[in-house]
Image 1 (spheres, rainbow, N blue to C red):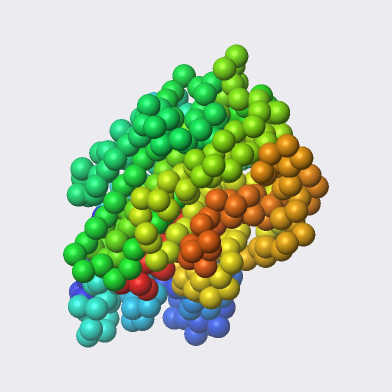
Image 2 (cartoon, rainbow, N blue to C red; image 1 turned 30 degrees about the vertical axis):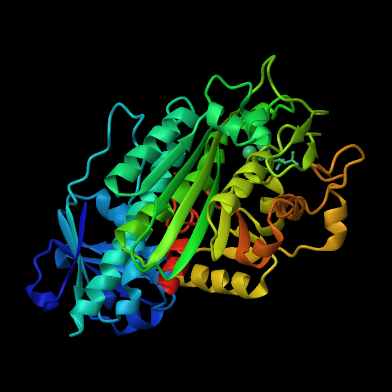
Length: 471
Ligand code: BES
Ligand code: ZN
Ligand code: ZN
């Protein structure tokens, strides 16, 4: 499906069908009011109604806000894909709403059919946004950035949705190299030999029972005259069985998504490089598979992490933090950055705390949390700040090592996981760092907002928005 922004009179635009957005108030004034009412259309949020004889698809919204437009646009595109129309258009006079339309159409229309022998077909080829104002040049920049970000979000979704057999640590490294080649990025990969040399023993322990070698991937985008340097770190568990602290069967299903943080980080560097942002970006990914076997790491093990701290393992299912401990330390040593953000499907507890639609945000800098919160609102993603405190920190105390990989109390698990990561953030970087727990927001088995089934691409939009604000 091709999406374009045109600057012409809506009446001159070639199309099969026109999308008309309306609230209940607008419906009362509509010249098609009678026909729409007859069809049972009430213009409530996310309701759509075809008037085939008028070539109109009416789309119900509560108000003309980006959130409402984005959401109904995804309903509209799904409805359109089931028809025989080949082209659709929509008139827009507020350029601030262009990203919402693009996200609604591109993300709402996304499906993943790689493993279906019979792919679905649609006749819908073109969607045109008809921009009716004069400042077309600035509108086209907004439009093309929105398309890049939406496409990168789909790229992230594709990787998340790939099976653990097809996407294991080694194939993840191959995919990263391919992205680097296509987008002109720097790329270095440490395999297990390299990881040993770098003393990433904590990360290596997690992947030891896997038949795939763990990989630490570093992608870099270095534009000339970069205004800032940003480190992105992603949890890339291509499968999380729980290890010897094995997950129950039903909880294990969907754990191919435990690489979503790493996939987000790849999507973000892809978007930033295609938008040609003036920001230097480094993406670090710890790609590991957490399995069982005679060689598996164990509860009761004590691991020596890359920064020298010793970690008592009491649960092998709290593995993401063990991988991130080493990758965070490696990233801080390799690149001196102005900001450092990690993305991880780290805890089920985060979903308990904030629900499955919201990304949990943790860190020490209130100002930085505020900036990211603002970026998320603008990008149409949900985030919520989870506060650190010294009492929760004590729950990670170990009797035999420097720190324990799980908390000794059952509450506040998302925050104690964040505090575990904090133990691996160098003093000079404390205020530069945020941790995003995307355990709930990265994957869905029932549709919500612009998300269908599977990976959502959580993090790509809000971080791209934040990076744009730096450039
Ligand atoms: N990958 C999981 C977290 C997760 C759970 C992500 C559900 C998405 C959906 C993580 O490695 C994990 O298993 N965490 C444990 C931590 C516990 C052992 C302290 C959890 O959340 O139960
Ligand atoms: Zn786990
Ligand atoms: Zn995990």
